[in-house]
Amino acid sequence: MKNKVEWKAKLASRKFWALVVALATSILGAVGASDDTAVKITGIIAAVGACAVYMLAEAITDASNSDKE
View 1 (cartoon, rainbow, N blue to C red):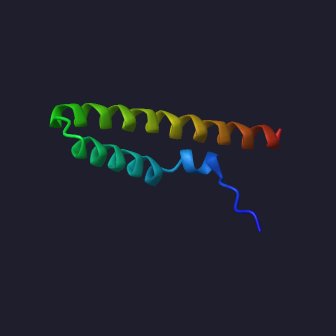
View 2: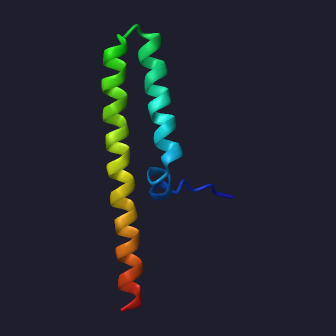
């Protein structure tokens, strides 16, 4: 039985992006990055995640609307 990863659903998940931010924050703390650097990097990751979620949500909406026509 194959377990196929649904990447579209993963990238649209706020939980996934929260995990990525938490992981980045932990790694930055472990390597001794300053608080300022950690905040900047996690902010960038959160922004990219928000854009990805928005784009995927719009694509899904557009696809469902085109099916109705």
